[in-house]
Length: 318
Ligand code: C5P
Image (cartoon, rainbow, N blue to C red):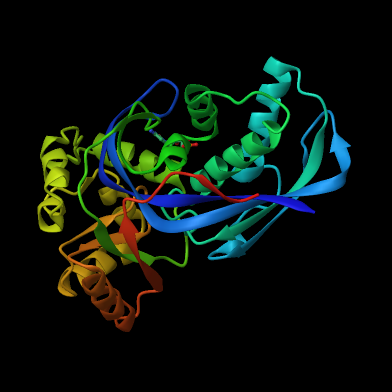
């Protein structure tokens, strides 16, 4: 049996400014993404005998690793949808014939429903793996078309496809590369239970309706300058997340974790995306390990150290 394996990385939002809700239900964002070393691997196991001409080419999905028990194993999984989206596009536009049947295997290193784009990374990896499979017999798509298919799968999927350090506007899917020097070291604290992204956005709207002044933090100028210095202490002073207040309001353990991180000596702590993962910026790899050890000894659920920026999705085997 042949396989195609693609790795894709998680992310932290160094800045997440959330504007008003739009007609389509999404919120207008100004965000700065940094991809992190934490990654998932999506493997397509290609059937040597059976081919499929219509409907999904995916016959099943399994997940192992971090939070694997809470990963959906059916066609709602973003990796499964990633394969279907790519194949459907080729069928509609390029008269694609039969393809081999595939099974999807996901090795998770990014928390599920943690605000680190774990599902989005799987979607990006699956999209790229399916593209590699289809282009064995068909012409390749250009980057713009792949980005558009990624955006159909979710707002963070184009970023996890591309990686690095990017400004995200629109609903987060419109990307502009940013200048960034150096490597940044993080201590990450995961939660036992995830948070649903729509719930956190919805709660931000509620808090604002009740008169709470939360952002919108739409100016990334100072952070952009800080990133060009390559100095983590400078960057630490300009982290911002408008989803932090609603995430903390929904889950009281987040406030405690942020407080513990500060006391452990992190340069700065922030909720990652819509949470509940908390990300602590540190001076060095050693410092990140020290901060994480301190947090673990205080009884937080679990965690890891990570560095950024990392890559977008890429083929590792196949
Ligand atoms: O794009 P994605 O499917 O990842 O978004 C999940 C949910 O998060 C959306 O349905 C929406 O409720 C919320 N969201 C939002 N504004 C954004 C991105 C996501 O309100 N810019």
